[in-house]
Image 1 (spheres, rainbow, N blue to C red):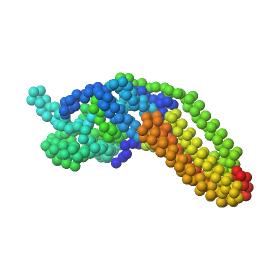
Image 2: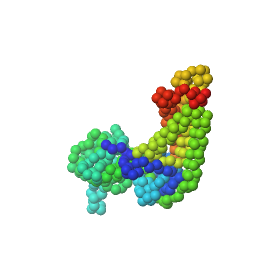
Image 3: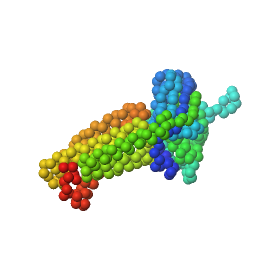
Image 4: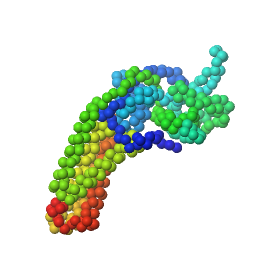
Length: 406
């Protein structure tokens, strides 16, 4: 079974996506509309609870792991605003938000009054537990969606299929029939399958919609248009330029004050930067970089520099005490280790709280700070140490103690 992230085009796998504040995207305004429940025939009113649930459904559907920087917010008593970064295909964007995700199972019955066959809903998707993608045959359009009901749904589905042996059971999503299999036997295991010549992308989309929950109301798109960056390319260029200048100044200061360890720390910072950027283009994470995210990266760079400063100051203290260069390195790293761990763990926990409880833009700051903090810990306690040990043990740069900042 394939994951719900799907697959990406080879040319897009290493592409860093930018948020709506740094690049264009799509703005969509939705109107929530009352709808009649197909089973109870009750009218679903638009209440504050309904609005909040709809926002949660769209958030889970469009931004399930919280790193895509998609803005989903209520507007008034019955409207929702959605902004999707880097999405300029209006038709695709509309399809993403238009789906209500209403799964229904319908029985074909004859109506004597109209002398026509009608489909009557006998069960809906409220009992759905999980949906996933599977194979229904051979070929690129031979994918299906497997689904599983909860305990109550499994019993109900078993009763329905037991009663409908030899009859067709229509499977509908948002009023559209996807398949109409003939019930061969009672299905008591609580699972089923939706077939319909799906491609892998279509099957993944359908599974995501089902897993994210169904809307209890209908939605109408009031307006949809692409937007230009709110800050523009000039702001991005200025931010990156300021970051690079700041990093170069820090590296020059480190080299001038700590000498060889400062040079090693500067090389480690370059490696750290490559790791951070590389982690943002990992396929499947759907990471989108925004200005708050850039702020998180810059703050984590400060954490990396701070960790090196702690180590180098400890090393200088050991050199002043008369120890050899190699002994000073080992003692300095060991004495600074607990302080570095404490600082990084507390920062990581704070970033996690921002990511878990924060809004979309705050999540972007939190996740970049978490990634940066974790990687800065690795570069500080492993990369820097290995480079300095390489300089003393293999390059034999240990006779001039001035090179180590004494």
